[in-house]
Length: 313
Image 1 (cartoon, rainbow, N blue to C red):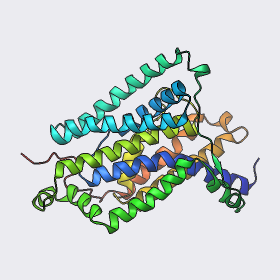
Image 2 (tube, rainbow, N blue to C red; image 1 turned 45 degrees about the horizontal axis):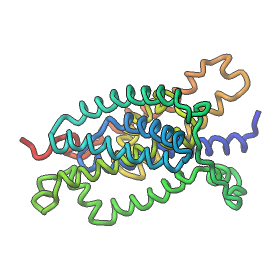
Image 3 (cartoon, rainbow, N blue to C red; image 1 turned 180 degrees about the horizontal axis):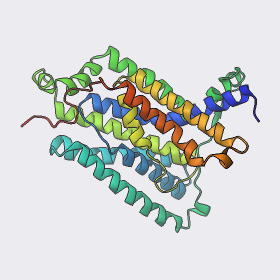
């Protein structure tokens, strides 16, 4: 049985790994929702990002190509979503649901085709490796968690600081808030509401596509059908849990990551799966997140015009 120090370090390491794709996708969804657009199809975008990253990396022999493919498919699906909802005024929830259904079928089909391709040797693709920072790795308890992550994890951390500054300290943040709370006033001030909302949706698609690539060509080193396993829906819950604020979103994802690390550690203990089914451990972080969401967000009100087409008819 691992010592307390080893177990704590393992939990924190797992927490950072689990939180990375959630917080990355959450950045985009937070911006989109604050601009008045809710995309429940984020699950499908992440799934397509995962399969396209895996496919591109396998066929080209380059993990970087996989990352670019995931970003491209995220932008493409986001552009389709924006065209249908922002410009054609279709229902955002229905459109997002359609994207999820389309992605589930398309990703499974692409994976089946890829498995039979000669380039997919043993179904494996080139993957990104973790980065070890020697000086940081020596810090007790938290050093291993901070110094043994993928490069994208560090990019996500710095991007969070930049996004917080942009949302809180710049005109850009005011514009995004106005898009969701008072689009008519924003339009009267000369802001092109539809174009700005489209840009926010594209940013959300880019983030979700990259988050999907993290799963397939970084964390899990492969692709399985429906490998996102509800993470996109969890991102939606975490944005609400964080009350549409960046610090709240990051805190929620870290708490989920810690719970995921705890369940992984518990499940690895000798005899744990003998007395309890593995699915019980796997559901713990999700159940805790939903309970916290129900308890802490009863009085939360998101952007006033979130989910509503503009201009109103």
